[in-house]
Image (tube, one colour):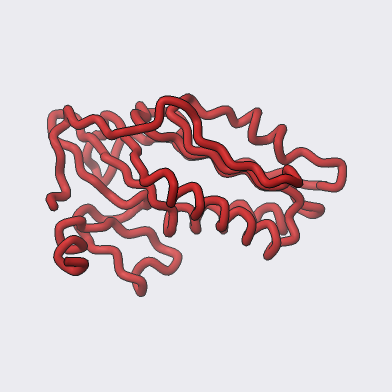
Length: 193
């Protein structure tokens, strides 16, 4: 399996949002082809018992390793990604004593400057909210079954795991702790076959 694709490749994405919210309305996860709504995520986590709300908005930047990026396209194995996102959210909620959490990720085309992920967390105190928000982001990037096709100006796109890193570098557990690395899909395919 190659790590590059033609710039005309279009990932298979759902036509409408896929969501999961727990019965207590303390956890909301979503994969969506639509533009992300940070106000809705913040509204979801708002609570009279929370003294802090943290909002993270990840956007598509215009370069990677000094190469000009034209856009990103995200795809996922949605059933498994939803299970993973829900597990991450419930674990974070419990671990940090947070009040509510929302993780919303874009699927499909994501032009420069547009939001690709929104994470909102509320907690009784600010340190718990900060820590929960950061850990939710890192866990989502490390574990969720979401991949991105990074398209470069005047060139082909490169498939990468949904994390920062060096193009073509295989993801290894030792390197992945706290630092994002890029997945070399060709090497990964060889190891799993």
